[in-house]
Image (cartoon, rainbow, N blue to C red; front, side):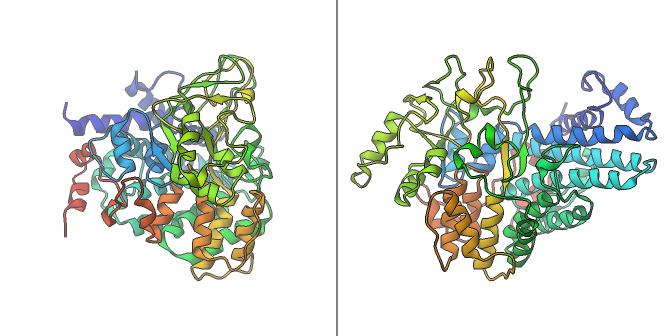
Length: 514
């Protein structure tokens, strides 16, 4: 079987799973023809089943494969790729290998989700014809459209010029022209405008049908993120201003707990991937594979708590940046220290005297030991062992994965204003200072772009690659040239995965010089 045929079957199988997740208890891959028959014979007058398409879409969104996030987030000066994936370490220093399996897997993960979302929207449209209240179908479609926009944004940030799927049919991708980075971003923004009138206007944690689900604010946030990359700063200010003026969101007071169990669906949350062990010591659980981030050597406060792989290391550049700013809670939250890491910092005479909170034991009593893979670990993806449900031992089990939060809205708003946008909702000073005060820092006045970017560095280290995208967008690439790294203008986007070039000739044509 040639590669093109194999990929078509893989995409098709994925779509069968997407459409049948709620109506078949058999494995669709075991019996695709039977499941296809089920799709064709769905009774769309049973409109109470329409919500199952929405539930399936949320399940697909939450199923973020472990390799996708590090490919999205690894290239900033906030984090190092540790572990045994050498091509990931090379990616971190802007040496890209299009044969690297994680590139292709990330491409497939995101595109498969997007095809799934198209399939769900198409199915909901069929139910809508018979729905007693068609506006419910419109809302469900709008929610799925926002999920699609969020994942399409990740693809565009990684590869720039990409394919915009039009339907759930995998074969249609062979006929789609490559859209430019700007075209993709504008498409996302336009899609959010289409979705907005149909979405709930409550806080995600106020939804009773799908707690933590997509709302108007989620769509506005995705729109703002797309327009930030377009450098359409007035659109950013307008979208973020709507979220701010809604009064539905506020920063969680305790930054340390924001990324832990108390932060699940907090008032700061705009979008989280949701997981649960249902409060039971055994049995069903849904979880992200937090092992990627976790310690390969530790002494947990709760004996028997599981290890991780130690593949995600905050950079010493980030640690020193935070120490220079006098950061306490955000540094303690963002970085887990080993004895070797502390020694490495103190070997620089400028950092010989460290704050008392810099320790290899957290406030929750977990002790982190030395390991050859890393000197530091990311605290943003750390769940204290004392917060595990009794009987559960997997690293980070039961924790949600934060995607978008109100602090990002505030700092995008400030960034837009420093770049010439106007707002009657909040000043750049007030937006930045809201974040600073929560971090225990004093306010500043006359906020500049550099102030905003520094605040975003401190606030979002180890989160979604925001630092890399900020620096590249504003041409501040000298910050990326540290620790032997050399960033050049053509390093912004990854090369298309080799396997995709073999089956999608338009990608190869897009890479050829004009």
